[in-house]
Image 1: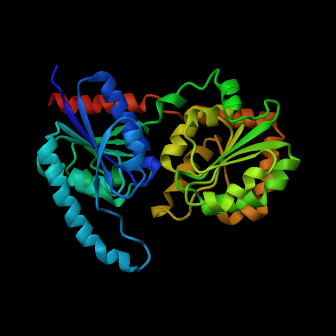
Image 2: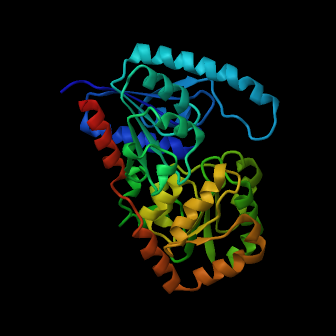
Length: 364
């Protein structure tokens, strides 16, 4: 068997990093002698998370264009040229057999250079509405793995394969982990547990909501695992002193967090939605309104339309949150219905199906 060289790029947020790591892990199990290299943005979280997963990573000096008019945007052309040149150097040195992009700023220059060198390439689009990087790359990439229907509007139809989004292997089977998970977090076993997820960096409006409802949750006899994000931990760590409240910048054992939870409040990023379908717990989505083309709302609506979750828009939180939450926490039947319906939407073989496509490219 040939010792393949596989290069992966994606990052900026956990939603781009973890799919790339999942794909790499699956390929490593198939090709134990393969050599892997990740490429990320030099100042983003992938520079920490990828080495923690046991892979080498190189960083590019790259960031996206800010939506507001700002002087930072003047740097963008220089960063792009620098990243393209650096990508060319990395490719020349590493000589990959295949290039995989999972989105985020760094994947643009690397995949662009890989495609121009004729290296077989696959892009994985997590969202129901693609980012600009993948839209541009799709014209020349060999294969596009997607998680939603109706993406022919954006990508060449003959290249699209619906696979779903890769998720962390450790969440695939949560059965039997609940007791260990509750002990891990030091939770009271008889109390209902609410897990709050604002994404790897945090979500300001979700954090403000949770802070304002801490006494309400106490009245409801609920304990909290609150992942507020690294940008907000200094603001909210004071609430660690409060009864039944745990505040974390980041959760390293997501399998335990999911297993311990009875109800989940989450943003609706593509990776989170895919994970929550597999986890199958009653979920309230609070989509971020600050993302391109409002794709978090579209991601959440795809679940809500199948009666698999509740969605509350940010500007409705003050008026409706307590009513919606009380209705859910007080009804075992409603919890059961949401659980069963969201599980039906899980695409559990995503990582394997994407690895199959990579294998096809390697054979060619």
